Image 1 (cartoon, each protein chain N blue to C red):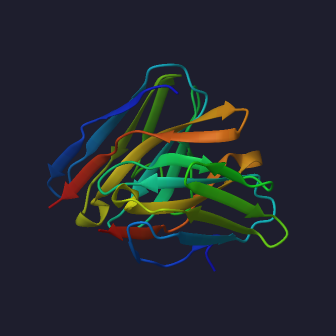
Image 2: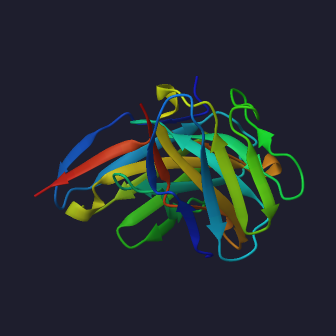
Length: 110
Length: 116
């Protein structure tokens, strides 16, 4: 079993749709959690951090459930520009080890 | 965040040769990392580049194949030695920044390597 698992995707949604991505992690010692976005042929870039209290940034909402070891990302009112691969990222702070999920591909169509 | 750059941005190499990739950060950072991203795959950590000591390699990666230098707090190199087509990949360098939100990680633009 992979240490970080994500929805396999791809997700094909129309503009304006709401889409949710899920991610689970297996190491309970994981300390920090993030969603990264990677555009085609580009490097990953931080989208947002994920907290137990939940955090929102415009159309994006991230949530962490430590008890279930589950992370989610919700995108509302999808735009064409949201088309990308979304990577779930878990960091073991003690060893500064970053684990990347395989990514979920999102296609938003007009 | 500090600006992080890599060169070359891409290269096409012959089997059996070696390529050295350079990574430059415009401010001092404690920890730098090298990742590989093979086509259609996510990122895999190759090693942590430590300033003043040998790099720490992840399982499946060895120093003879991927020698790393870290001469100072702003620069690192990764060499892909005795290349084979299986080494065709994107190689990314990265650094951590401690912030109030936790450990944030930033990536260079990547080096796209094709081995013939």
